[in-house]
Length: 416
Image 1 (tube, rainbow, N blue to C red):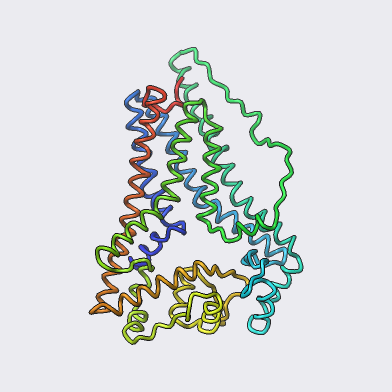
Image 2: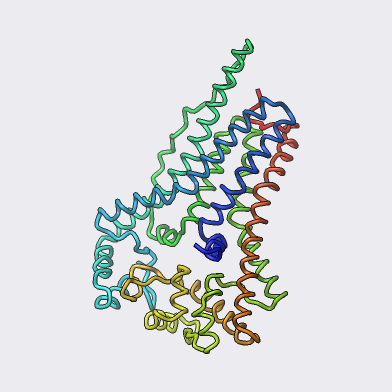
């Protein structure tokens, strides 16, 4: 894997890679260090307890948060396959429009992709069963990590601390009363009927892993607040978790937009494309030879006509590598996949803008190189800025908030 591949991966704010780098590589070690440093202001004993709790909490949570959803979905997809369905089918295709839908795709691809069409017909004839399986997969992929991270892990972590404090108290011959946490309601739920409607399932059909991680983060916030050992700890947890959600899922996209717009103004370079595209030699040569083919317009009709008739074009190849469209091995567009036209139009505009800017430059090769370097710099800057906010600014703000509401720097859950 080249450096550009790595930068491209961590620059995609709709993927798991920037979260992986920020969370495990930068954020967690910094949080542990700051936790120890702040609690040392009170006592070495509390610093030891807080550091141990933070270490277990952060690394175990990261493992579940980053790996839980893909793992659950892997087994869920195996189960769906055993039931005779293709789990890659996008439920949005149940809604027919002028150019795509399960019926239109069956008719259009019956000779071009007969195997895929058989799978479509099977799903069409068992629509309710497939929708139920999709809903269960989504529920399992989000609720299981939420339960483990938000409820089970904190309880186990707190129990370990209580046990250690109890042993410490006995060793020091102190009459120590262990606070008991009421866990009788753990795992209980109100007897409400939950129904999964087709509209709800359709709305989650295009959720990527990172979208589901945002949902589990919301569930994790609720879990951490409700399992807190006192009101002060609940307040601090809510402050920390809400700040973390904003900095993980909202801020990076705005930082990226700001950096790309600034680069465009300063250097007159469009850097919205993936750096892997910018360094592609075939693409650069096609611009030089004026052979970059694009759809005639942004209309769905022209877009579908182009992607269905010219899968070998650079536009279609790059659109596929960026997850905008999907083709089978024989070059036919995958009938089981939904095409997000708005997303494809946005990609076309960025592609076209880069081509036009490159053509108007004095040296196309140098222009593309410069654009790649600027985009790579923006991606690295985004990671560093968002990581600094998550790893340093947020923990510092958390302990200032902690001091404000408790009058102490030590973690409120550790008070005797």
